[in-house]
Image 1: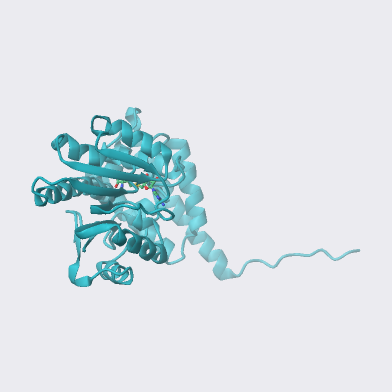
Image 2: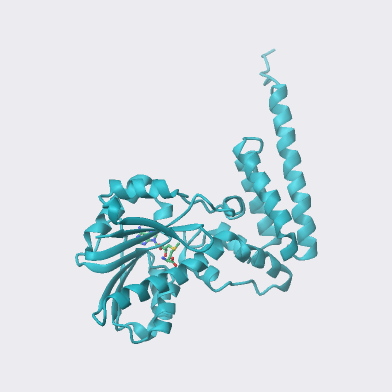
Length: 320
Ligand SMILES: C[S@@+](CC[C@H](N)C(=O)[O-])C[C@H]1O[C@@H](n2cnc3c(N)ncnc32)[C@H](O)[C@@H]1O
């Protein structure tokens, strides 16, 4: 008779941990099903749901609940009960990653699903601090452009827009100042983003040139008064951050400015983004941004970190 290998039972501690993890997932499931049955959370219930999400984030960080179990659960409940919502769109990452031009544009336009029974989930999404901050950065860009244009006193403003995405921000600038003396080079590595941006900015294409390029591999040969990039640096490692920023500092004219957006380390919706949308960013502190700027060759006497009203998006301003 051959010996039969019997695997030893998991240690008592591991069994207890698995039970605790399953219990947390059951509680989450009860809570979400309660909201699903009522058609999604209402504004006065946001605090309760947000608290539960942050608590969940703490359990993941403490290793009480396994990220893989949670991911599988979120995928399943989203697919079965929340199709077509912003949450489903972020999880699906149709164009390769959460934060593609279409999701960003849906944030700008507060897109909601056509399904009435799912609308409240999208309103909950758009009320999160992170989407609010993204919408604020559009206004931040428009204001920055206006400031730079005013400082040119009638002379033309040359702008480089790195990772231009949907170009909703540029469109809003031109809607306010259709005759503005600006030329804008937009760089994006996604041809669909460029097509979308060209459509949104159709009336002003005499002053906008699109470049279908990976900015990490090709920096433009000419120089600019303003170099702007939002929604790119918070996806890259510190090494690439320094590499890209030092390349951008080379293409700004003396007296010009490089402005780089990055999610801050004060993002109250980070757990929601990471757990429900699998949307992972490199959140950076002001100190880290300044340290990276110095490594990229910025003069710290000419460098400052600003932010939009939520304090969730930082903007690193570097003068040359
Ligand atoms: C989060 S969106 C931001 C869009 C826009 N700047 C905004 O704030 O509305 C990021 C965009 O960066 C583009 N992108 C990502 N990596 C890039 C790279 N290495 N070179 C050029 N574009 C890139 C993506 O295709 C996408 O359209």
